[in-house]
Length: 239
Ligand code: BV8
Image (cartoon, rainbow, N blue to C red; front, side):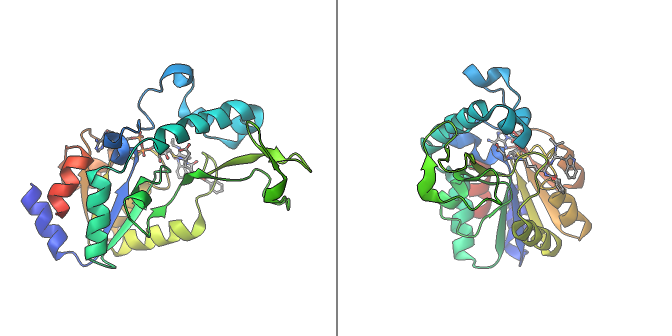
């Protein structure tokens, strides 16, 4: 099956790659749906990753992100991240990387123009964006806040119920419509509108290949499913 997909990659002038949390599994970052451990095992990530949860329990949500940031800071991009970045560098303009992931590992592997649909966990922004709070007034805390008006800092990620960054989503939709081949890697295909991009590629005539040890709803539009880990499969396909 690798040879078939290698042939499709070789022929394709435009390739879109849609990655999810499984892409970072072999770096040691637990996937979103894997059971949370320790203190966090009592919470469902989907309930914590919302503005309502943050406004109701700012310290709990802030500390959950601090815990995840510590985990992510301690890991490295894996051979799958590196294979994608290296291919994109060797073939400028042929591969568009679209990711659900907020861990920044694609970017750390050298993928310069990754479309990070859900933001970046390493960055913060003001909770009430309309206020003109200044960075020098940030007072340390869990979460930090503005010493003048009390506005809170929040992780610069897209929470459930929040819109995705319009420019990144539009670029991702265009790439999904135009691609001849889409590799869908390490996503359960449950989070929208990101997961819908696989259907967009299929409906626009693109070939879809799913790379995931498990079955997902996206298999329905896949011409081939490679039930392998991303860090093993991608280097074999892209080298
Ligand atoms: C929005 C940042 C609307 C935060 C995240 C239909 C259309 C539009 C919206 C919806 C819709 N239906 C429902 C919705 C609402 C909702 C949604 O999708 N809910 C789902 C749960 C039903 N969507 C939203 O709220 C989105 N916003 O729609 O706004 C709107 C419109 C107008 C005005 C206002 C609002 C926003 C969604 C973004 C949420 N934020 N992340 C944070 O991280 O803290 S999403 C979060 O979950 C992660 O970032 C990740 O993206 C996602 C988890 O999904 P996966 O990446 O797939 O990871 P998962 O763990 O699920 O699966 C891992 C897979 O890897 C598995 O399949 C596993 O088998 C595989 N795997 C494991 N190991 C490996 C592997 N694969 C390969 N190799 C391995 N080694």
